[in-house]
Image (cartoon, rainbow, N blue to C red; front, side, top):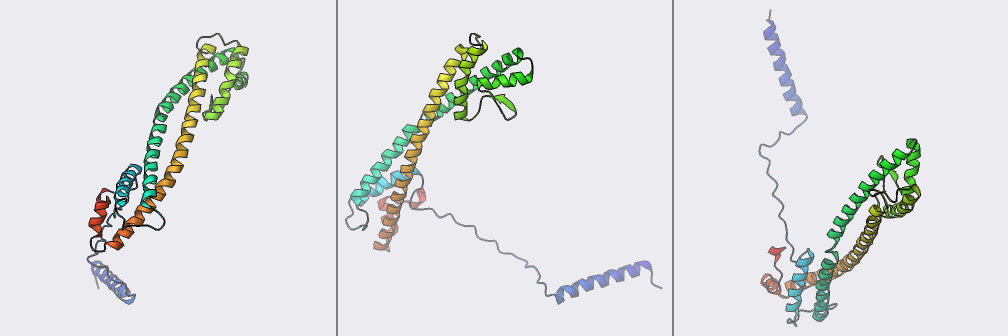
Length: 258
Protein backbone atom coordinates (compact mmCIF):
# COMPACT_ATOMS: atom_id res chain seq x y z
CA UNK A 1 0.00 0.00 0.00
CA UNK A 2 1.07 3.56 -0.66
CA UNK A 3 1.83 5.82 2.23
CA UNK A 4 -0.22 8.97 2.84
CA UNK A 5 2.76 11.17 1.87
CA UNK A 6 3.26 9.36 -1.42
CA UNK A 7 -0.42 9.74 -2.36
CA UNK A 8 -0.32 13.44 -1.52
CA UNK A 9 2.77 14.02 -3.71
CA UNK A 10 1.15 12.14 -6.61
CA UNK A 11 -2.01 14.20 -6.36
CA UNK A 12 -0.02 17.43 -6.40
CA UNK A 13 1.98 16.29 -9.45
CA UNK A 14 -1.21 15.48 -11.35
CA UNK A 15 -2.72 18.85 -10.52
CA UNK A 16 0.38 20.71 -11.80
CA UNK A 17 0.37 18.69 -15.05
CA UNK A 18 -3.32 19.51 -15.49
CA UNK A 19 -2.65 23.25 -15.17
CA UNK A 20 0.20 23.05 -17.73
CA UNK A 21 -1.96 21.17 -20.25
CA UNK A 22 -4.89 23.59 -19.77
CA UNK A 23 -2.62 26.61 -20.38
CA UNK A 24 -1.23 24.99 -23.54
CA UNK A 25 -4.68 24.04 -24.84
CA UNK A 26 -6.01 27.55 -24.36
CA UNK A 27 -3.00 29.07 -26.15
CA UNK A 28 -2.33 31.47 -23.30
CA UNK A 29 0.80 33.42 -24.28
CA UNK A 30 3.62 33.65 -21.84
CA UNK A 31 4.34 37.19 -20.66
CA UNK A 32 7.42 38.69 -22.34
CA UNK A 33 10.59 38.79 -20.31
CA UNK A 34 11.48 42.36 -21.21
CA UNK A 35 8.79 44.99 -21.72
CA UNK A 36 10.25 48.01 -23.51
CA UNK A 37 9.75 51.30 -21.68
CA UNK A 38 7.68 53.96 -23.39
CA UNK A 39 9.82 56.95 -24.33
CA UNK A 40 9.04 60.08 -22.32
CA UNK A 41 7.09 62.67 -24.24
CA UNK A 42 9.11 65.73 -25.08
CA UNK A 43 7.69 69.13 -24.22
CA UNK A 44 7.51 71.14 -27.41
CA UNK A 45 8.09 74.79 -26.78
CA UNK A 46 6.32 77.39 -28.88
CA UNK A 47 7.88 80.22 -30.82
CA UNK A 48 5.04 82.44 -29.58
CA UNK A 49 4.85 83.43 -25.91
CA UNK A 50 1.68 82.78 -23.93
CA UNK A 51 2.20 85.03 -20.91
CA UNK A 52 0.94 88.57 -21.49
CA UNK A 53 4.18 90.35 -20.65
CA UNK A 54 6.31 87.94 -22.71
CA UNK A 55 3.93 88.20 -25.65
CA UNK A 56 4.03 91.98 -25.54
CA UNK A 57 7.83 92.03 -25.48
CA UNK A 58 8.02 89.55 -28.37
CA UNK A 59 5.42 91.43 -30.41
CA UNK A 60 7.27 94.74 -30.02
CA UNK A 61 10.51 93.14 -31.21
CA UNK A 62 8.88 91.40 -34.16
CA UNK A 63 6.97 94.53 -35.12
CA UNK A 64 10.15 96.63 -35.20
CA UNK A 65 11.86 94.07 -37.45
CA UNK A 66 8.84 93.68 -39.74
CA UNK A 67 8.78 97.42 -40.43
CA UNK A 68 12.24 97.00 -42.03
CA UNK A 69 11.41 93.83 -44.03
CA UNK A 70 9.52 94.77 -47.19
CA UNK A 71 9.80 91.23 -48.57
CA UNK A 72 7.64 89.73 -45.77
CA UNK A 73 3.96 90.53 -46.21
CA UNK A 74 0.52 89.36 -45.11
CA UNK A 75 -2.49 90.06 -47.32
CA UNK A 76 -4.72 90.83 -44.34
CA UNK A 77 -2.33 92.77 -42.08
CA UNK A 78 0.28 95.45 -42.71
CA UNK A 79 3.39 96.00 -40.64
CA UNK A 80 2.18 99.51 -39.80
CA UNK A 81 -1.20 98.33 -38.53
CA UNK A 82 0.44 95.60 -36.50
CA UNK A 83 2.81 98.12 -34.92
CA UNK A 84 -0.16 100.20 -33.72
CA UNK A 85 -1.92 97.12 -32.34
CA UNK A 86 1.20 96.05 -30.47
CA UNK A 87 1.56 99.50 -28.91
CA UNK A 88 -2.11 99.46 -27.86
CA UNK A 89 -1.65 96.03 -26.27
CA UNK A 90 1.33 97.24 -24.23
CA UNK A 91 -0.63 100.28 -23.02
CA UNK A 92 -3.58 98.06 -22.07
CA UNK A 93 -1.38 95.76 -19.99
CA UNK A 94 -0.02 98.77 -18.14
CA UNK A 95 -3.56 100.06 -17.57
CA UNK A 96 -4.65 96.67 -16.20
CA UNK A 97 -1.75 96.64 -13.76
CA UNK A 98 -2.49 100.17 -12.53
CA UNK A 99 -6.23 99.57 -12.26
CA UNK A 100 -5.91 96.40 -10.19
CA UNK A 101 -2.99 97.40 -8.00
CA UNK A 102 -5.24 98.76 -5.22
CA UNK A 103 -7.51 95.69 -5.11
CA UNK A 104 -5.45 93.77 -2.49
CA UNK A 105 -5.53 96.79 -0.17
CA UNK A 106 -9.29 97.15 -0.63
CA UNK A 107 -9.76 93.45 0.13
CA UNK A 108 -7.63 93.75 3.27
CA UNK A 109 -9.53 96.81 4.51
CA UNK A 110 -12.86 95.12 3.81
CA UNK A 111 -11.83 92.11 5.88
CA UNK A 112 -10.84 94.31 8.82
CA UNK A 113 -14.13 96.21 8.56
CA UNK A 114 -16.06 92.93 8.45
CA UNK A 115 -14.23 91.69 11.54
CA UNK A 116 -15.11 94.87 13.44
CA UNK A 117 -18.75 94.66 12.37
CA UNK A 118 -18.97 91.01 13.43
CA UNK A 119 -17.41 91.84 16.80
CA UNK A 120 -19.96 94.60 17.38
CA UNK A 121 -22.85 92.35 16.36
CA UNK A 122 -21.68 89.70 18.84
CA UNK A 123 -21.88 92.25 21.66
CA UNK A 124 -25.21 93.54 20.36
CA UNK A 125 -26.65 90.02 20.44
CA UNK A 126 -25.60 89.66 24.08
CA UNK A 127 -27.41 92.89 24.95
CA UNK A 128 -30.54 91.73 23.10
CA UNK A 129 -30.42 88.33 24.83
CA UNK A 130 -30.12 89.98 28.24
CA UNK A 131 -33.11 92.23 27.61
CA UNK A 132 -35.33 89.48 26.14
CA UNK A 133 -37.68 87.22 28.11
CA UNK A 134 -36.96 84.22 25.90
CA UNK A 135 -34.76 83.07 23.05
CA UNK A 136 -37.74 83.28 20.72
CA UNK A 137 -38.18 86.94 21.60
CA UNK A 138 -34.43 87.57 21.19
CA UNK A 139 -34.36 85.96 17.74
CA UNK A 140 -37.35 88.00 16.65
CA UNK A 141 -35.47 91.13 17.76
CA UNK A 142 -32.34 90.09 15.84
CA UNK A 143 -34.18 90.53 12.54
CA UNK A 144 -34.78 94.24 13.23
CA UNK A 145 -31.00 94.72 13.24
CA UNK A 146 -30.45 92.76 10.02
CA UNK A 147 -29.18 89.71 11.90
CA UNK A 148 -30.06 86.44 10.16
CA UNK A 149 -29.42 82.72 10.62
CA UNK A 150 -26.52 81.59 8.41
CA UNK A 151 -24.45 78.44 8.87
CA UNK A 152 -26.34 77.69 12.11
CA UNK A 153 -25.30 81.06 13.57
CA UNK A 154 -27.18 84.33 13.97
CA UNK A 155 -25.04 86.99 12.33
CA UNK A 156 -24.94 89.66 9.63
CA UNK A 157 -25.25 88.16 6.14
CA UNK A 158 -21.93 87.13 4.60
CA UNK A 159 -22.81 87.97 0.98
CA UNK A 160 -21.79 91.54 0.20
CA UNK A 161 -25.06 92.95 -1.13
CA UNK A 162 -27.13 91.27 1.57
CA UNK A 163 -24.80 92.67 4.22
CA UNK A 164 -25.16 96.17 2.76
CA UNK A 165 -28.94 95.88 3.03
CA UNK A 166 -28.69 94.61 6.63
CA UNK A 167 -26.41 97.47 7.64
CA UNK A 168 -29.12 99.97 6.71
CA UNK A 169 -31.32 98.49 9.44
CA UNK A 170 -28.86 98.78 12.32
CA UNK A 171 -28.85 102.52 13.10
CA UNK A 172 -32.67 102.96 13.19
CA UNK A 173 -33.00 99.75 15.26
CA UNK A 174 -30.40 100.99 17.76
CA UNK A 175 -32.41 104.14 18.30
CA UNK A 176 -35.70 102.27 18.79
CA UNK A 177 -34.14 99.75 21.21
CA UNK A 178 -32.40 102.48 23.23
CA UNK A 179 -28.93 101.12 22.45
CA UNK A 180 -27.82 104.15 20.42
CA UNK A 181 -25.90 105.76 23.32
CA UNK A 182 -24.06 102.64 24.44
CA UNK A 183 -20.35 102.98 23.60
CA UNK A 184 -19.57 99.44 22.45
CA UNK A 185 -22.74 98.81 20.42
CA UNK A 186 -24.20 102.27 19.84
CA UNK A 187 -24.28 104.61 16.85
CA UNK A 188 -20.77 105.92 17.66
CA UNK A 189 -19.42 102.42 17.05
CA UNK A 190 -21.47 101.32 14.04
CA UNK A 191 -21.80 104.57 12.04
CA UNK A 192 -18.15 104.85 10.88
CA UNK A 193 -17.99 101.11 10.17
CA UNK A 194 -21.14 101.21 8.04
CA UNK A 195 -19.80 104.22 6.12
CA UNK A 196 -16.43 102.54 5.59
CA UNK A 197 -17.98 99.25 4.49
CA UNK A 198 -20.25 101.00 1.97
CA UNK A 199 -17.32 102.98 0.52
CA UNK A 200 -15.00 99.97 0.29
CA UNK A 201 -17.70 97.81 -1.28
CA UNK A 202 -18.32 100.40 -3.99
CA UNK A 203 -14.59 100.67 -4.62
CA UNK A 204 -14.22 96.89 -4.89
CA UNK A 205 -17.18 96.61 -7.27
CA UNK A 206 -15.97 99.43 -9.53
CA UNK A 207 -12.41 98.07 -9.58
CA UNK A 208 -13.59 94.56 -10.43
CA UNK A 209 -15.78 95.88 -13.25
CA UNK A 210 -12.95 97.99 -14.68
CA UNK A 211 -10.47 95.12 -14.55
CA UNK A 212 -13.03 92.74 -16.08
CA UNK A 213 -13.59 95.11 -18.99
CA UNK A 214 -9.85 95.51 -19.55
CA UNK A 215 -9.32 91.74 -19.47
CA UNK A 216 -12.01 91.23 -22.11
CA UNK A 217 -10.36 93.74 -24.43
CA UNK A 218 -6.92 92.38 -23.61
CA UNK A 219 -7.87 88.82 -24.50
CA UNK A 220 -9.24 89.91 -27.88
CA UNK A 221 -6.06 91.86 -28.66
CA UNK A 222 -3.88 89.00 -27.47
CA UNK A 223 -5.68 86.58 -29.79
CA UNK A 224 -5.15 88.89 -32.76
CA UNK A 225 -1.45 89.45 -32.01
CA UNK A 226 -0.86 85.71 -31.59
CA UNK A 227 -2.58 85.11 -34.93
CA UNK A 228 -0.29 87.61 -36.70
CA UNK A 229 2.87 86.22 -35.09
CA UNK A 230 1.92 82.65 -36.02
CA UNK A 231 1.28 83.72 -39.62
CA UNK A 232 4.62 85.52 -39.83
CA UNK A 233 6.43 82.39 -38.62
CA UNK A 234 4.87 80.35 -41.42
CA UNK A 235 5.73 82.97 -44.05
CA UNK A 236 9.33 83.12 -42.83
CA UNK A 237 9.57 79.32 -42.90
CA UNK A 238 8.26 79.33 -46.48
CA UNK A 239 10.59 82.07 -47.68
CA UNK A 240 13.68 80.67 -45.96
CA UNK A 241 13.33 76.87 -46.12
CA UNK A 242 17.00 76.20 -45.34
CA UNK A 243 17.78 79.02 -42.92
CA UNK A 244 14.41 79.78 -41.32
CA UNK A 245 15.65 78.96 -37.80
CA UNK A 246 18.32 81.65 -37.97
CA UNK A 247 15.85 84.04 -39.59
CA UNK A 248 13.29 83.46 -36.84
CA UNK A 249 15.91 84.26 -34.23
CA UNK A 250 16.77 87.45 -36.09
CA UNK A 251 13.11 88.45 -35.83
CA UNK A 252 13.07 87.77 -32.08
CA UNK A 253 11.44 84.33 -32.13
CA UNK A 254 13.47 82.27 -29.66
CA UNK A 255 11.73 79.01 -28.83
CA UNK A 256 13.94 78.24 -25.85
CA UNK A 257 12.41 81.22 -24.01
CA UNK A 258 8.85 79.94 -24.09
